[in-house]
Image (cartoon, rainbow, N blue to C red; front, side):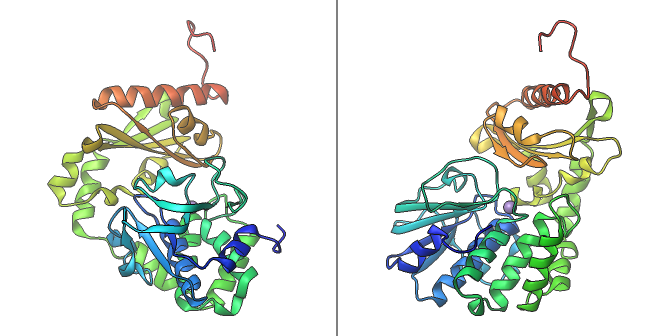
Length: 333
Ligand SMILES: [Mn+2]
């Protein structure tokens, strides 16, 4: 990747108006870490910046430096430039954004394009890795401990703490540099792994009770009913990462979490693959998107059984495409 001539960099350098850096809804550490790091850096460069998110910063991310300054979207302000980070488009912000120019920084495949200022590399292990590249190309000496910590948090979590298939020598190189710049790996890990609340543990108990296997154990998933949140005193954001339980089962190729959103009359789906099935394609066939190994979509029906059937038939088609299961006799696929 050529470090010079990043059009977004030139745009940011010249920008004199207010800038919005927006994370996607239901934020994770990569989107929020990217937004906060970029926000801190741009302010150091004298820019007027708002870091925004539709949702309240969830408990598991409230240790990120600057997280208490994140502004809830939508806001009335009209921005000169709005940048959405770690998302396939502004629709992922899920709140109105008023801006004359738009750009995206992302490592997802495909999605919406807003023009020459988009900075997208599907090969990047995290969006924070892309933000790091951008900031290095501008002024590496302005990357302080708070910026490095936010960037490291996104890199560590998007790679499953350096265990997923997107982890390579380059990932460790970026991690090394961020640690040299002040990021604290142990602090990051402890905050993600050892700060669980009892309510969340009670939610996990209920959710694991819904665990079910399909397609001879190639597919496993969980269902998270809205009442589970109410019964355990949890919030929607507590569902983050629970899809890793079905994923951890031996023999499972595709894992899903089906999460009820009654206020939108739909079910949100998180999909994970161990590598043989491209779950981005499954999500796309249902109107969503993501990566080969991790994707998401929404199924716009109220009934759980119906939503599950729609999801499982899309997964079944993907398994058939990969030759993992045979097509049914009376199907012409
Ligand atoms: Mn990401």
